Length: 280
Image: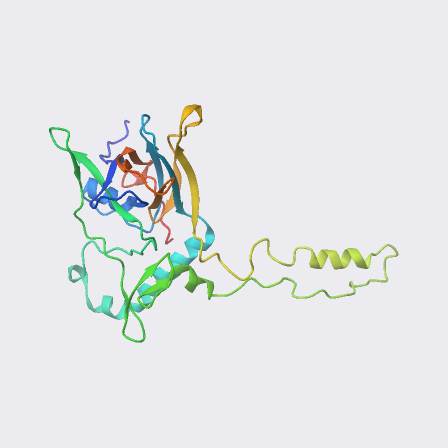
């Protein structure tokens, strides 16, 4: 039996509502929502590709949030805290009384200009798709202050997702100390106290920072695309972008040709694209 057709726009060009030549951010969930006129949730790990026109003379560096355990668990903790913070209100607002397209949304923490997907009219004039409600999730703290969640630096109105997760605890030395003597250490003539100590102390600390989660550096560089001569790389290939955030930085600081860039999301089983949940 032939596979059923699933209509979905997974790729296109991009631009910015306000002219800019600096760094930009591509919110893939918003691109998919705008082009397909349906809700694509933010808290998923989208498989994305960024490409550059073959005749472009530009160079860009492409970044995404690290697709690691720390970022996944930090986002899940923020989501759980949101559910706890809003539980009484959600219990009272039943069914259609709650916003139909509400979604758990966090801020990227970047000050980069947000981009929009582009489609074309009958005369092939590019038209940006700018409409859509993508407000960040709100919680109210113990001091009655409304706050958002962010991958960036904490402020008086934003919780730092990783900074808060970092407070959950550190990795402890295991075992916490060497026992000194081995059990029955005088039973075997060839027992070695040095080896016994090594077995307890070499590897008792984790192979990473035991006291931090890298809260100040959640982004990883995916690739640099562009270039001249035979050394050009015109595509990142598909990569994982947690929360759909893709940060693009012109090499040299500025570029007047951001519309040389294209975006694409890999085909998959979440409304036609590959994007497993980050909250399960």
